[in-house]
Length: 374
Image (cartoon, rainbow, N blue to C red):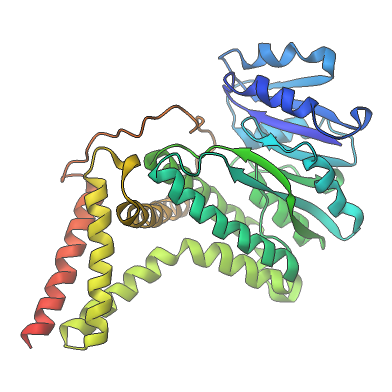
């Protein structure tokens, strides 16, 4: 098998990643390590070349074309039965590769996804919120794998049968579109929770929600490029899984907005149940607003950080969907893994997102007031 490591300006972690990869519990003569560098200019390539005697191969892509194009280039040089995709900051358990390979004992399995775990889940409010969300996500992956196929891969740790690789469009997100293509060809995907790797979260709310926006922005376009997987007559249960896990989740902000608007209207006509729902919505948005106006957002208590994370992720999901629908897709980005002490400059009231939150709270409270007045 070939372990393909994608990187752009990862000099800070690439040496540790290569040492980790060379120490994997897998026969050395059967494991090839290939690093694809997307035009790195911080010394990453020089570090990788220093491991040439250990069998590490560097593939450099000029012109900063993005991770997907880098993988297209790298895959032209892969001739092994299995390919494992990884990121430079994902440190593998010694037995992770063996656990991934075990899934391919079934000839109907086309890809196997490992479990990426966070090492800084208690490092701050942002990391705690992301860690909670990710534990929920891993539980869903486990159930999906039992029913049909796990929806999508994980750029940090997933493997495919090499012959199932299809060159991707530059705007595709590889660890989502590639597995969909494999399912469309009649194979299934497994989640292997014992194949573990470890990485850090983005570090603060701003980086985390920007990462979510980018993922949604690229994924929704990719889903409609392989729309056949949403046809239950072709994909069976997987069609329901991909629609509910991905498409409907990306549209949750729209459903929430409609539901809250309806509750506010019913509250205004005096229905007590919907008055309670409206007040709950106002409380959540108010907590998110307080968190947004706070400079030290990464040290917030959980009753502020969770509402803020929830509201911001949903708002940025809408932004990602809108950008995709208007033809704007982000194909390159810088690593979100930079040092952060949790301090963030306070946001002014004139910020559009802040104004939307504030106006929403006012309108919700007005609707409650009108209901009580009646």
